[in-house]
Amino acid sequence: MARAAVRGRLTWTLAEVVDLIDETPRVRSIVLDVPEWIGHRAGQHVDVRLTAEDGYQAQRSYSIASAPEDQRLALTVEGLPDGEVSSYLVGELRTGDMLELRGPVGGYFVWEADMGGPLLLIAGGSGIVPLMSMLRHRNASGAEVGAKLLYSSRSWEDVIYRDELERLASADHRPEVVHTFTRSQPPGWTGYARRVDGQMLAETAWPAASMPSAFVCGPTPFVEAVAAALVLLGYPATSVKTERFGPTGG
Amino acid sequence: MAYVSRGFRGKRAKEREDSRLPPGQYLVDDFPVLSAGPTPHSPLDEWTFTIESEVAELKRWSWESFRALPAEEMRVDIHCVTKWSKLDTTWEGVSIDTLLEGVEHDATHAMAFSDGDYLTNIPLEDLLDGKAWVAFAYDGSPLEPEHGGPARLLVPHLYFWKSAKWVRGLRLMDHDEPGFWESYGYHIYGDPWREQRYAGD
Image 1 (tube, rainbow over the protein chains, first blue to last red):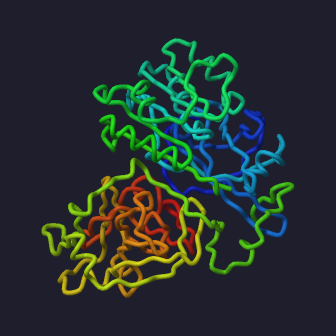
Image 2: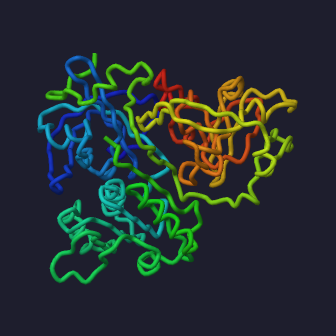
Image 3: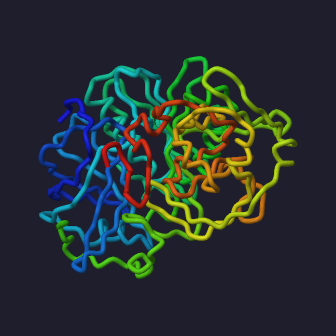
């Protein structure tokens, strides 16, 4: 799985859905068996194509959630109210179905263990997905580079990968995981309960002097605010990599 | 023949009929934002636009002198490689024909360069004859920084990553070479009608 990707033309390939995991009421992970997958790097995405019986097709891009080391390719998809592809993937798709995809795509919003760190990962909602691939890769590769995840969710119930994040955070060389809940908080919650802002970043982010690599993924206003605040904290713009999605992601 | 996805019907009627929609695209009404890093903010009194060759600066404008150039209003369709398309967008800008007027060169390609070190390569003929602009207004208002303001390249007949945000100049070249996304596996040319998303498409 982890062998280096040979860059050729990206062709459509059929993958089999081998498992479906409901992460939250609106978010589902799709575990795929992809024959002859050429491997990916943490942070990359794939294009998914659906075809109706009359030949109509729809394509969308989804971030890869699994680590390069994992045996299966996993995508995690948030069902959007009017999303013709995401609502199919979250609501209709069953194990045993085939899914057409091509990839991996993207080479900038990528982290590999030998790129070092420390790593600062900042996620808004389902923006966690490519960052989870990085955390899984960091764990699977045994990298000892420091990692912090600041993860903004609406509520505890909306936290994707909740149990796995807790497990990771108690392992050796654990990443530091900081949650903030913007809409409702669990009983007795004493942590952050607001949108990520400059003050929160000043309290949680690695100091700029430690030369961190920052990856920010979430909705556009979230990414705009976080990236601007990191620059104000002294992070060079080139050390802040961003990936955005909008409500129209489909 | 593509695999038929069990139970998939597709909800979007417009996409089936609209001949202005390139293959694999869907229509949006809003204006999604995509960029690889923080949004740069160049003060207008420090902003310049430069035409340069590989060895020398050929022409340079301040914001004031750039805005004094004859501008045009355009209504165009835009197509992002991430699959969204937006029809009938309205812009105001200065055509590349105007910017290259009187510039002597034998270039075949241009590399657009931007604040934030973004680069994208485009054949020169795709920038000329009223096909491309440096746009400073969108939908009747000054271009927002997150959409590339104060000024962005607008090359609507290619995928929208070629329409470099925060553009600060063009380097004229006698050869082609990959820019930023083109170095990360995206197509060297990027024609949406031929669905040239990734290298080799």
